View 1 (spheres, rainbow over the protein chains, first blue to last red):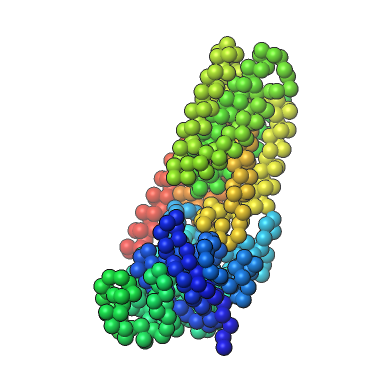
View 2: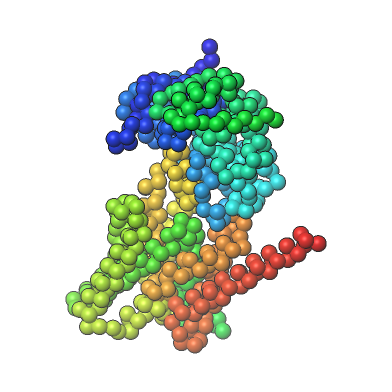
Amino acid sequence: MAESLVKMENVSYAYENKQVLSHVDFEIQRGAFIGLVGPNGGGKTTLIKLLLGILKPQQGTIQLFGSPLNKFNQWNKIGFVSQKANTFNRGFPATVYEVVSMGLTSKIGYMKFFKHKHKQKIMDAIKQVGMQDYIYENIGDLSGGQQQRIFIARSLVSDPELLILDEPTVGVDTENVQKFYELLHHLNENQNITLLLVTHDTGTMTHHATDIVCLNKTLHFHGDPSVFTNLSEHDLSHFYGHPVNLVTHNH
Amino acid sequence: MFANFFEYEFLRNTFYTGLLIGLIAPLLGTFIVVRRLSIIADALSHVTLAGIAFGLLVEKKFGLAFITPFYSGMFFSVIGSVFVEKLRSVYKAYQELAIPIILSGGVGLSVIFISLADGFNTDLYNYLFGSVSAVSRDDLWMILIIAIVVVTIIMLFYKELFMLSFDEEHAVVSGIHAKRIHFLFMIMTALVIAASIRIVGVLLVSALMTLPVAASIRIAKGFKQTIVFSIIFGEISVIIGLITGYYFEIPPGGTIVVTSIIILLLAIAYKRIAFNLSRKKAME
């Protein structure tokens, strides 16, 4: 059986008096490409914040790479591309190279400098996402999809084993969304990076993910994408708490 | 034209101080501008004024030579920077509120200290608008120490400061001690402001931290280049401003700022011309 990188057991979380997650059991096994879907306010971002230790669960336990969250200290194994990544200050004068270099900042540590091997790593990460022609461009001059690739590269540069992406395709046009999923697919298949992708885009993702997880306060579904796409509208409406039209893309 | 600057010691002190602040003010200013904290420099400079007024008062009423206005100004500035941080965490949703509170507090205290010291005098005028003859040898040493400390800290914490400026949340998630580094940063800002006031004056010190950066950001690619251009523009402004200020007997604060505004306008014009040219080329 594959090693489990994330294991949540019976996790509950409430903001003040609003229950967001209740009794969630959730597991990510090495090599998976998990698409996390669910309605707005269903607790997707909260789940990620719990995984990253930004929030503490009020109930239940979380294990990362086999050790309890409060003892876990190999944060460089986890890469995170935030929903907010594309809301940065577009006038910020930083080149693609400089942005990607930030992925190594905490790994290198305080009062130490970038060395040749780090520079090589940064270049490799930029090549991995296919942005080598833009190394010295200002990040603000790139398109939304290109910027998103750069933020992925920033996470890749520290060699994560698990990459968590929170709605990375918001504001990216359809054609580039397609390319973006191909990139994720490549990272998952060829680089053995485990992926957890939070998204609204249930259609495209079902072609690439290995598992779909549907979250609305509790876990409503965890299984194969083909099963998910064949769910009746009635079932989905039950998960989401309101009527749903599943848009499928058949490419 | 330069000859006088090397002939007289007070001019030499001024010139060296000018070169030092022409380096550190835009260096720190680059971080201040990209973090959208430009206005904080203004608030802190007014707190520094309160400290200076306090120093002038003590000097006049009690004749205590060890509290010079320069040192009391620096002390107030550092305390002010701590207060800004405290207020920003008290008013999380209205972080900009910290600025009018600190700024008006600084001006209010200044008015009280100034009138207790029996009103305006030349010294105060020099502190407001800068002076070419106000830098003593001791001041120069102190400013040199500040410059060395600031440059060293920025080099040591460059990658963390850069990351915090770009995306604070991401920095925190990856384990950077945002609070401590930010605190260090605010203290440095306070020190640089206090160091610059001798030459550019309270009212214009924030200009030396922001205008060269504003020009640089228009034309630079990337963060390091922005810093380098900012420093170059800062130094040019200080050198031209000091020399013209001296020959026309104008406080250098005015001439330095006007020079940096001219540089800023040139940078904007250059960017526009370059943009139009590249568009023309693309259309051909």
